[in-house]
Length: 155
Image 1 (cartoon, one colour):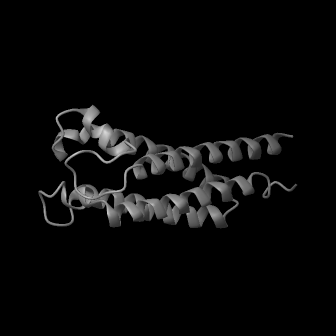
Image 2 (cartoon, rainbow, N blue to C red; image 1 turned 120 degrees about the vertical axis):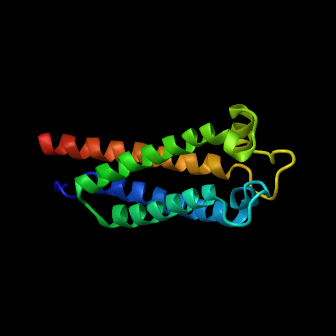
C-alpha cells in the first residue's frame, strides 16, 4: 500500500461520520423547538440554535474534505476538530442557567436523556447523545488512521 493510501480509508470513515453528524445536527435544528426558542421564551432563532448551525456547517465541510483528501494535515485537523466539538457539546452543560435550568444535572438530563424532559417543547430525545457519539467516533477513527499512516511512514 502506498504512503498516500495508508490510512485514507479511515479518513473516509472519519469523513462519513462527519456527514452523518451533519445530518443529525440538521435534524436537531429542524425539530428541537426548545433549541429554536429557548424553551418558548424567545422568537426564533435563539443564540444556541446558531451554535448548532455552526456545528452542522463545520461537520459538512469537514466531512467533504475528509472524504476527498489523503493529506495527513487535513486528517489531523479533522481529528482535533471532532474532539473539540465533542468537548464543546459536553461543555454546553455549563450554560444550564442561560436556558432556565437550575442545575447542570437537569440540563444534562434534557440534553443527553433518552426520554422527553418534562415540561419542554417538542424535540427528539437522544439526538444530542447520537451527535456526541458520532464526534467521539470520528476522533477515534481519525486517531487510528493518523497512527497507521505514521507507522507506515516509519517502516
